[in-house]
Image (cartoon, rainbow, N blue to C red; front, side, top):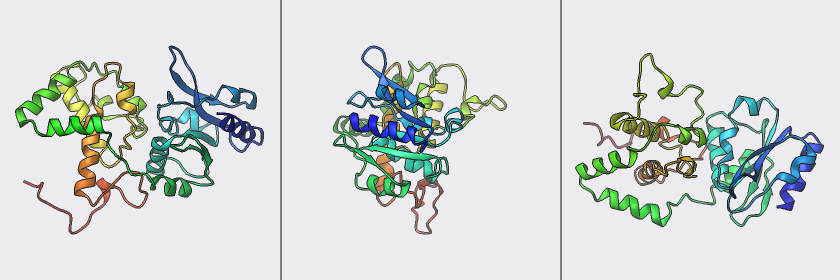
Length: 266
């Protein structure tokens, strides 16, 4: 994308930003993240249908933030993640410039995060047909069958935590699974430990997941763990007044309303 390369070069030459985060060609016809700090390196930037990594996952890394003001190549899922991160006080206008890529693959530069938020709100999160059909199938299973389904699906997991590393919302410097005093989640890869890890992660993403599928795309075993967060996206929308993430005004898990339903309390 020539427009992206040109604008990135201009920003670096003018010292408007210190680093441009984008995509470059990797191995085996895949793309990877690139951190461009010199104007002459902007020619390495690319953008095409292979660029599915959520680059927002790098915005909270100390080694990246310490470089100075960042510009990031942002598709719609990345923009959603940025607004969610902003609402959690992880990024702001002083340290970030968004070079948006519209669904029509056009470059749009936003003057501030308020503009990004307005743009994002034009596009509702919609679960794709294939995953929606799978979720409907799981919902119709008896409880015992549904339990066995997840035990089987999660059994191959060997806890590489690639899903955690790829997710822009998993930015805690020390995750629950890293604690050993007390040991909240079992370290070994076994039936109970795998289930606890993936359910815990899904719960922590309730009202925060932007449906970018970064976790699923990063999984070396293609475990459909994104179905857990997609289920929560649907539940949040159905039971909390059409709620979706990337809304700065409120958070699903931290907003109390007197008329909230309490039928889940036993």
